[in-house]
Length: 469
Image: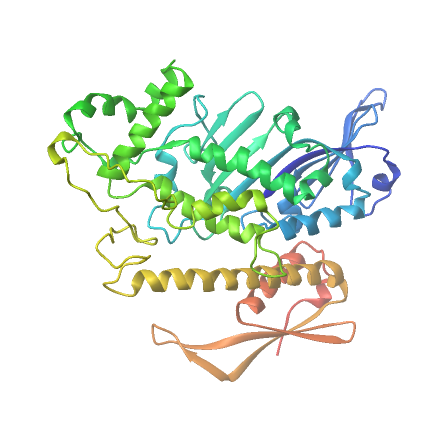
């Protein structure tokens, strides 16, 4: 969940960097005098190492990408992963207690590929956030892939992670970036070690991340296209409520603004087929549970400050039942009618109010239930594949010059292609330091692809190019 960081190191010996084999520093020099101009900078696995002229030493960049060997930051980044990444920084002399935070980001990558609501719909539904005008985020020089809401100390972002990181599946990124540390000074977060404190971090996530999502107003235009079904007394105000410019120009007090927000959400819950904010909270809930889970088990009690939000949103983001008498909001034409609370399929969004209590998916077929199950299975496969690819990249990088690679195809191991073609499973045997490693299928094809890239750039001795057996 922690991604971008900017830290300043104190009591630091600069020679640890200047003599480090993995850091190659560049600096501008004057043509006339040869004098160094500006800061010395080195880049390694998604992080920028900076030595300023006055002696300050800083690290900027994505610690998530650093954990993935600089490849990407588009997968899940748990608290355990963050802890490992911080420990890996000790290679460059980073002591968490002496690393002062100058800015950092917290955010989640939400997989929207199986929610029946794509990333663009989520982005287009944002009406209001923190009372500031939104600005477009550019990705690869093109606008329209996300929005940024910038306040005095914090920047809030919603954008298409698939487009930014060239991923294979739909991914929505929601992020809170602290540009000035006074935004978090009340939480006692001053150094990198404070982000390793689960109590401080969970309280920060709840107040500065989850709360801002609760306060953000979402409205899906297609769900209530006209005011025909609305009560007469709300038709006029509804035209303003669904207009994003109206919320920005509105100079009413916070109490009045919250009243209008609650009215709009009430109308959405009653007259729209689905509530996009509820679906978004469900996606966030799944990621939060994965973020806070440790290898010791499936309990999340170490992040106590997140429990209230997780528990209150665990059933389609609805409030817990109480013994308080229920007051049903309705217009004058249907007084006395108590309407059932609408429920929707967690996968396709279809209304399932008439199904038995506790149903999560459509009962007319197993399609949605199977999709939910397959999502869990694909997540496990994705994690396994990324781990294997990281291992392959490490082998090629560290012992590439001594690598002997043999590609084999077992003629007996055949399978039928959907188009009627005969296929053979690709396998490779890697020999290094007298030890043999075997890779099969997609892992073998990935190894061959990366190996050939290195060979073309002359990072590996051409004599050790791929042999066919």
